[in-house]
Image (spheres, rainbow, N blue to C red):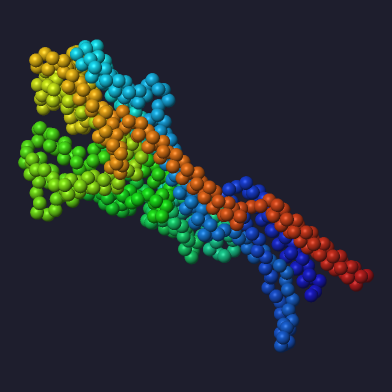
Length: 581
């Protein structure tokens, strides 16, 4: 090798050492950046010069030194996929646990004097007093007063649950906005990366880190599948539908219903109806009828968890017996014609699978034992698919059931005894007993029930006397028995029957137990997510000790190259000086 060639080899080594030091310094600078991917130096031989190729075994060549081949990112696609899936699942259970904890606080109510449970217990005590002294105007007045308090506290609990639903609804809007923004930023970064790397000279590693950061954040919000095409573009699917394909982002839209609740849908798949409204039935982002489970991979993402926690409507007791409650309402509707009642009930029974083709329901008809069982199963199936998984809606339905049961039982007993306020029933005001509906169409549900103003003004309208003037102990005792009767179950999946005074305790215990289980699931999943993160960090994370070792190595190589160049330079100077003299 000539001295001039030696200078070239030394210069190449010096430049390569300097570049390697810069890469190592860049790694050390980002040692605390959780989204940074360790960059690894790859060195290679420069092109060899052929001096003589006549030898049959070993070619006569001379090398031109070392070159800086590439700065490559150290990542593992499998660990990326594992971490993102477990991160999304941890976010799902974290949101679920937070929701149940918040609802538990609403139901337990720290101030015992203002708690719904206290109002329920006071009402039970008053019913017992009324059973002992039904003719006492003082006790009658107390009963009306406690009924007011009972409804007031029930409204407060139910409205807090509704407020929480709307709070979740606001967060859902924000999350969908973030998802769309992440998609656009990932698309922009992919485009920039492809433009930089298309020549095969540079690697856009820092831009890739930024893209991976957005992908990680996206994986927290929804279940995603990530792939890369041959050009370097990133493709992402959310819930098995295309979200990002090369440079195209298929954004998620939101449709608002009568409750103000929004439903995410794929804008590209929505169809416009003739009246200008959108049909999103085939464009929904989430299939909420599927069971939530890790086996089915349906428990991933904060967005879905929020939708599950919020529900899609305000729950009511009708949700716990969907078909049976509708049939009951139709039969009790005095304003509906018999023919219409029969038609509507037939439709419901056929939809529920209680009646088969050719069978018809007629008013007054009694269902067979098998048909009753089929109706119960239809109610259970509806509950399991449409209600059970939705936290707020389910708890609202279970809570409404106790209020509905108490109100309708008291009204029925007073009606059977003939205790009305003396007002003739009318189409506008059909309810003239102790409890009345604020809006007839909304049914006997929390928020739509109040105590009849006439009873508030004159509690003695209850009379509690028979037609012969005797004190009506029978009705008072029946009220007490109604409170103590074990006729209610929390939901169709349970079999234990409860009385009113134990029902609310069981409801709170159910929420507490669910919160405890959800917290345990969250903790377990967080550990799994952390383990996946640590495993990934072992590959792509920066170790300061390791990088310092590399820095020392590359610094020594740089120093050696410098000394090598100095030596060659001195030799050249000596030769030139000697021959020049």
